Image (cartoon, rainbow, N blue to C red; front, side, top):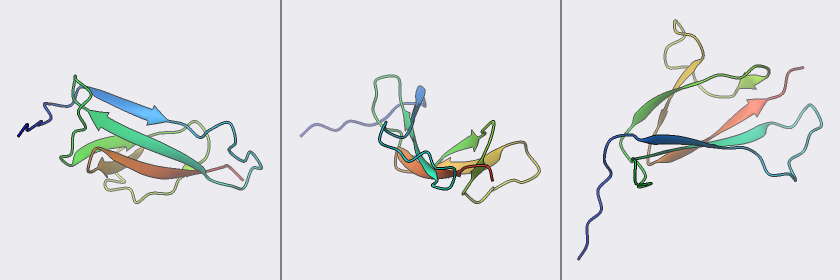
Amino acid sequence: LTVIAPGDLGRIAIELPSKSAVADGKTPARIVVKVADEHGVPVTARTPVTLEASSGTWQAKDLDPTQPGVQVFVEGGHVEFCLIPPG
């Protein structure tokens, strides 16, 4: 039996849509955020992150609207968010 437990947060990875993503100005872009320790083991603990974009609107509940950006939690090591194009 081998147990692998994550350490402290070491890296945040952002996965952008594939090249086949629709760029029609209406379809949301699906963005994946992954959190891991320095060895790449997913950090499964609830981790706060701030989402920011130079254009468009995040389709996510802002947990602290008094702070800049959109405050959200990543749970289970990864989460997917939608970025609505400006319009």
